[in-house]
Amino acid sequence: MDEKCIIDRFEGNYAVIEYGRITFNLPRSLLPKEAKEGDILTFDIHIDKEETKMRSQRINRLADELFRE
Image 1 (tube, rainbow, N blue to C red):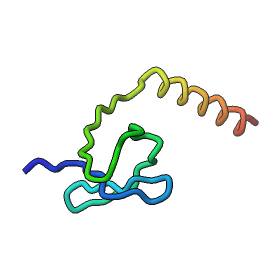
Image 2: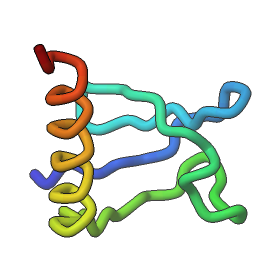
Image 3: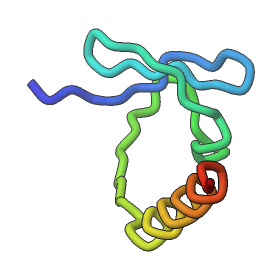
């Protein structure tokens, strides 16, 4: 049986998502405006390798400055 992500309900700025026996909160701002309770969600998640690389370089520069003798 394939598990589905289903919008159970909305609580404030969050959607409560059911995924099998697991529930988790997802910021409502990440959902389409027309999303409603009972809707089934699909996700297409990608890693932004360029942004990840730039973030890592920024962190390394900050660490170098912080720990410079």
